[in-house]
Amino acid sequence: MGVEKKFGKPFGNLNSMKTNFFDDNDGMLEMADGMAKVLSEQPVRKTCKICGSVLDKPLFYSHGLGYIECGSCGHLNSEFEDTDVFASKVYVEDDYSKNYSAQDRAGYEKRLQSIYVPKAEFLQDCLQKENAGKIKILDIGAGCGYFVAAARKLGMDADGIELSQNQVDYGNAMAGEEILTHVGLTGSIDYIRQTDANVISAIGVLEHLIHLDENLDAVRGNQNIRYLYASVPMFSFSTAFEAANQHCYNRHTGGTHTHLFSNESVARMAEKIGFEVAYEWRFGSDINDLYRFLRVSIAKNGNPEFASYFSEKFVPLMDKLQLVLDESEFSSELHFILRRK
Ligand SMILES: [Zn+2]
Figure 1 (cartoon, rainbow, N blue to C red):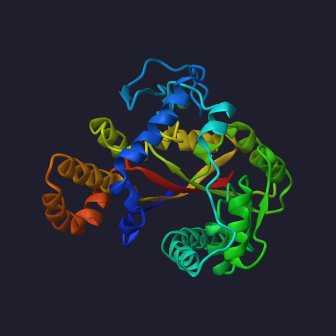
Figure 2 (figure 1 turned 90 degrees about the vertical axis):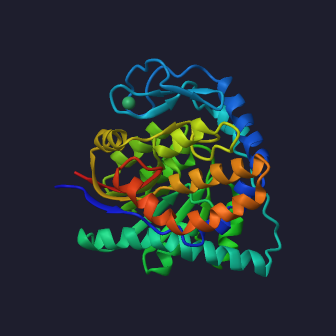
């Protein structure tokens, strides 16, 4: 069976959500540089994170790190391994106050509607085409529970597991019910092994799993699981835009992203667990990154007013430009649904 493909998603009001990327470029850059330094102290990566092939020399260097394209599956691997030590140093607990304000609640609701409901709708639409019957989702790395809440809103049965107790507390408070459970560092593996859910979802999670293989093995071993829904960062134009703009914050290739997927590495990952790629939805933020780099550079060069002038011309074109990049199948983010063969 072929892969059903969907392209594009309007940025809409997403630009307004990450203003610190624009206003605090230097602070964000410093944070990412700090993470790169921690990564550079880890063991050299010898084999591809996805297919295990022996890695060659870096294809390029960006923000102090070499990146190696796997000769076999095209996965982009940083030259150093992500390890438990790396994870313990770079994943810092966000600070959530215990007294959530009305502003928190409005922000939560806005993020839920604009970002997570479309992701849940995509899953629901695809599984209807599959005649998958009653859906039960286990969301791993659920964070503040946005995806779980969105899936429930659409009438699907969904629960989440999450490492951060603060995010579990925040997500459950916002949802008004216990939709998230706290698990330890390798707790997700036991959960996946034992779940009676037929769908595992992992939105922006797989790339952060130090023990990715063990998690995938657990999916393979549990026959209840028929589908894996995930979004992952891709080796893409954003990578090149970042490599060309070393004074700008690298959201995509760097920080906690120590490796980036390729179309082939996603397919290999599916194959490894006895699944196949069934549906893809590709919409990146490459143009958003390019726009940010141009704006930051124009302002840094002493022309803050011209940065605003440029924005007025450029912003209305961004959805169209991004769609061109998405359709090339080399853009920064891919949502996919894998089906058990
Ligand atoms: Zn590979």
